[in-house]
Length: 545
Image (spheres, one colour):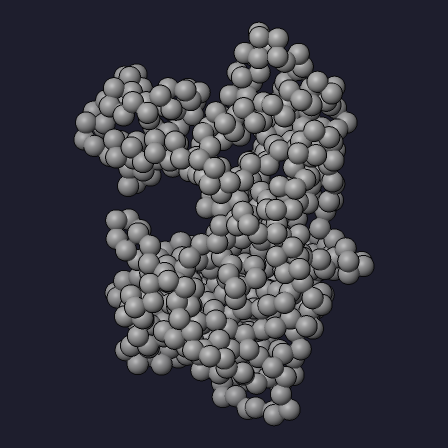
């Protein structure tokens, strides 16, 4: 495989480990835990893995001996920078414990376990993937592990390969599945441990025990670099407003972090929109007002950051989408021709939702009605929110110009940054963090734990001061309605409006809106001063201050 100069240099980087994972390691257990909500329901669903203690790894003078152990690893869900380093940390620790141990990677996600598709991960293979982005070592998939027949199918290959533990690297849904799998194997006495690792670039898998999900740091730095480049271009040409949509359907952590790094003129935070019960028109008025104010100062340019999931947080749009989901699933809807669809929908919607639907640009209205998933639901992620807002702002400014309220110029450019950040070469922070997570997962297995998620805390300090351990997955769960049924799930972390990151942003946004305060973060630095190369996200620094 041909490699770039950076790939070659990067492969030699040795991730830093906390003191608790270097040399001999012992385990320190805390008090029993309980779930964040619905304690009785969660306890009843997970009687064998509920209430276990938090654990922490600490240096030890005792040298342990370990029998050979075979372990499996699965990458689940969307890609996130650093996944390969989790596998490398897992592999290295497993081989350190006993060179005869083996690590098997199940191919293309949880489906590889069910379908018995796997590969043995060797020294030669691992050497090719150290400190690299992507999930291409074994691939990823979105198969949900939730049915007994899947667990039993997986058990067949687990027994055939003499595997004693499975490590699932994924987000909140994947780790919920890991918990269900751990409970099933524990209840049946199969002797198979299951450990999870927290992954998602969206940043919504975090709580008191998980400081951040891996990949968030690298993805935000990747997006911030390009946003900074666009802002430099905007400040040079001085004739375009750039509407930039960023990944994050369920939460606005990426948009907020990029705003803190780049200081754009406008950043919409979905959670604030919902909290304040804002309408689409409220958002458009706000953006148009900033455009008009800057135009009055001679600045006909700027940047607007928009979270991918904004539409679902606008109460009026949420109500419209819910009614459309029901309406489009009816047999009557399937019989309506494309030419008649708009009029038919308007005749069926409630008055309030019809008014919202009619106010939308035709392209967006068409996306809402024609693009449906297999269950008949509107695919919100396909809506070009950045174009929707810029078109509505342009229309608003035209009206203001006719009224003499706006005398500037407005021209928009559109961007969506998504996949560009998911497989970037991990930052030093993510390279170190992920390697420590993999090492922690191997230690959890070696200490007989199951139903745990590997964690690493205190990560704004130097790496040797990081604290590694594990948290019972049941501790992070509550009951939520999914597909019409109450299900145990890990609670998603939304942007907290009373949190330090949002408060810092809110304290500065008026100044950023009026003046050109752009910051240009530049590309991720891998070699150089620690204050440049090893810093965590601004979000994490503010949260841990």
